[in-house]
Amino acid sequence: MIRKAWFNTVIANLLLLVTGMATGVLSARLLGPEGRGLLSAVTFWPMLVAGLATLSLPEAIVARSATIGRDAGAVGISALLLGLLAGASAVMILAPALTYLLGPERADFRILALCFAIGWVPVWNANAMLVGLDQASQRFFIVNLLRIAPSALYLAGLCSLWITGNVSVRAFAWAMLAAAVLTLALRLLFGWRRLLGVPDKTTLAALLSVGLRFHAHAVLFLLASQADRMVLLLAFSDADIGHYVVATTFAQSGLAAVTSAVSFVLFPAMAAEPDRARARALLALWLRRTVLLLYVVVPPSLAITPWLLPFLFGPAFADAVPIAATLLLAMIPLALRETIIRCVRAFGEARVGVASEGASLAVFVLAVGPLMLAGGPIGIAAARLLGQLAGLFVCAQHLASRHDIVPSTWLLPGREGVADALAIGRSLVRRAAA
Image (cartoon, rainbow, N blue to C red; front, side, top):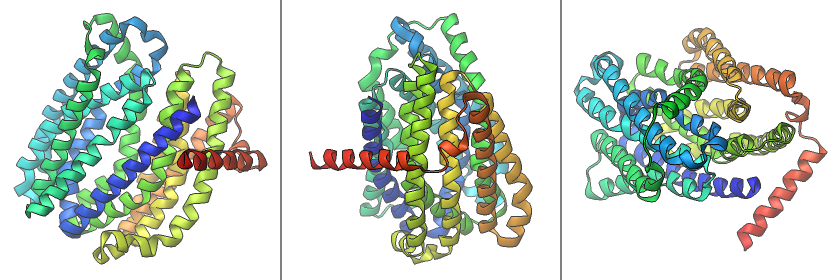
């Protein structure tokens, strides 16, 4: 079952890759480095705050999947209400801070950023809660189908704006928000029955307790994963930001399409598995598969980056090549440690995530100043790579000490891992030919 769900999730992620890369390429080519950087500046802070405001309730829903049972409606409506309340509170905190965060050079876009935040944060939270409910019930077909919707709808919106000649940062921001709203409408259309319940204090308290236990990691993860962009937004020009955003899009899209599918499917499967020894064996197996995939994909990706990135995004983004290459290397430890952190939540373990993100953020903060002064945006990417390596070290230590999964069994691809990868490859070929 896990392999089938993983295959389906990989296919969905590949479709997300195609639509995501298409939107990235189209927005970069139509807006140029400066306009692409400005769009990121306008949308970044609302997106960051939305991630913080989920309170990790979607993960709490999945972690409690084995005990939801007949109370699915109560859990669904309770999580939705909590998410909307947290989102509204977050917008109230963000609104007065936007003036400082955007800076005086972007004063003309403060109203746009505020309107985007008011719409984006509650819609994002509502979508996140519904995704959590689908994951908990392991309805991966519906989950994957609707995960494609925001990117596909945004791409359709960009194409419409391009055809009609309405190309601007403002128009693109509204198109992004409209795609999120339409996606929420589709989720409610497909899943409104899961909200047919009455919220109660016991369910609210239980979800909030589990969510907050995970949320310390989520906060540190968002800060650690977005710290490089924070530095860019506060210290660099829109053109520099545009180059970095394109480099990040290029570096993360391809690998994330496959690696993120592992934790997306494995986490709920491990949470529903009563035998902990079997759950640990599943984690070790899929870690080996992820590592082997990364070792196979990253080197050729690095080799074609100097040609492919300018070809896709345009010659104006040629300066983003070294940044993208550095971020590609950073994807290896990032993908592995996030798989570990998310999957061990099935055992109720949240501290390793906090420790890993804390180490990653601390190393980044210590390294970013000197490296940024020496290399500009490339130095920021190098600091991100060092931070990811530090976070992976903490995760590897945790697996070895708590679960007896030593690094040598998954970091180094052995004969068994290669044979397993070949078997998966043959299965993919058969599925494609069917």
